[in-house]
Image (cartoon, rainbow, N blue to C red; front, side, top):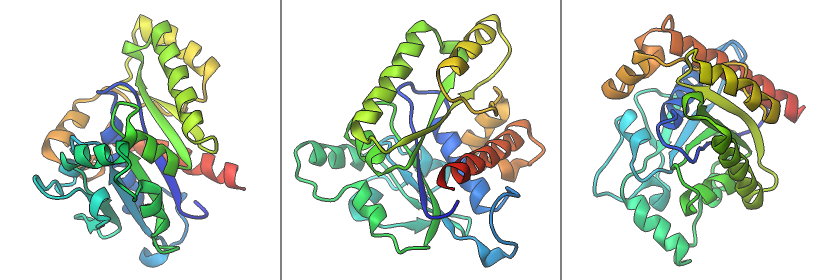
Length: 259
């Protein structure tokens, strides 16, 4: 990635793997587990920032930085570290409800783009934002600040209705930020069924879909429950190396667009 790149992970549906995707991609980059990352020495790549834009605070809980009853990171602008030196977070919690209400009522003069613009040049390589599963003010703020968008979907819940929903999402996003580019649709919870085999070709004919798919796996559930990143559980685990492959695909796509 040439300059600081901001990527939003968003889907209208819950349970499609938004948070685990955000967390895993950020952790893999921060721990330099992709051969495409620039530099050869430990200090040759910058840090990664994740922003928890969901009032449920699942991303913050995953990285053990959830603070109930305190002001959310987007309100304070306070970036804190995680257990990995190259990975920082703007933590979220239920206070995001009030922060969002202030945005609706135009009482909040600070938005996500302002916070990102205040970051010192060269401080971070990439910012990943975990958006809520709704086109609300939190999502709109994140999409306005993003360079690229990744939309996770589950083929087992995909249908002609799902296709229309996806098209509507993209129209909504384009209205919010015409410069935002759809990096790709990510198929998650993947398994071979008659429905998935019928739906996947249709999806790929209509949208840019990542070659990499994330399989349905109990390791993803365990990672979430144990609050341990997949890569720390073992890079030999199927979802861990699938996400590593996805990160390589993301870096390649961004480089091609920016060059």
